[in-house]
Image (cartoon, rainbow, N blue to C red):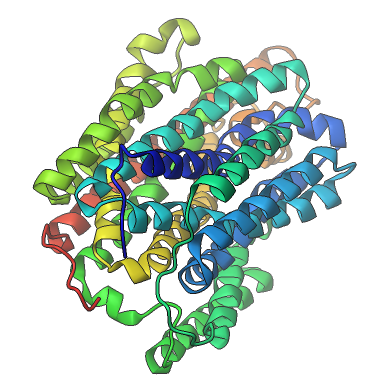
Length: 514
């Protein structure tokens, strides 16, 4: 299949269109979190409603992203990519005009369907269109720009939230998506992974979609109803049964949507395990870092977003350079050092205690964010290059779908499991903090009941004066204790990702028959 140079006109248009489209999807992961208070007030949403507004999109994305990659390989990557963009911007417009919570959740699911077709299409277009010698550099460029947009999302969200314009988080996707569609229609040629006319693996597609949806739903319900609830264990068990069935279907299928021989390549397996662990740690760490800044350290929403600018600047400067070096020297050393450095950044952040707010940023949060940003800057492009380089071009969409699905599933699982653990850690620390306060058992129960709100916990209205002050002080100290433990667990997940690279990732090229 003919490829083009990164610096050619065709190569530049491919990069522009894929970066623009991917930016729409990734901004949802960061900007929406910041506007939630404004959204909640505007629509009268409950805490549970907010939970589903965030995760309805993620649920559909994780469930369908493998199908999106396989469809691109079969039916044409440009065609499926454009279809995904159109569905995504349609869903975005509908979200922006949604009059209530229920319709907003439904339209977020529509966005997820579009994202499942769009996200794997961007990387598969790059991987199959750009010259192999420049592929890592191209992926580094894509990673740098999309990460900048992702990390810039909180700044944009904070500005919109302060102005009461939360709906513009969705509306901003529309002109970006339309511009990407025009570029793709006029400047980018169609690319297919293979020319065979065998039908899509429908049975496998149904099994993987339902299996991922069930497992994801089960984990998403844990913070709301508890791990022992029947909804949790029935959906988790059902999902695992379906995923096991999917593996058996793929093993015996003549035309599998996820060829299992891909996992015979240790680099492909290792890169995906690294993705699972590293992004689980990163997503949870970033979530609790934001909660700490806004709820405990009293940063404004915009100030919290601005604190991640060092991370963004490092991604701009380093990611493209790291991708080019990975082309020359292989990705293995970067995928060992990068997660170790990122884990060290998360570990440093775990030692931040109560601060005086933004005035103390440079001596408290900044060093850890700088180290975390450096580690991720050395990781993202070589990691994507390792995944895409460990399979042949005809499986590019499938490989991208697998890796992106793992990223999203890691986010859901980590936030659900470690979120529930954070509440337990917070409750334990709180019970210890209020032990010496002159409260009866009923009053202590009322205080501990607020633990589900983590850093947003407030002393019950029955308390006033000194008692109220002491209880709120206990909430702050208990959250900082829980935050420190969660950040250390997140750091450990980063180190575990590096271990996967040590054990499994190699620098050798992909075999032609894979």
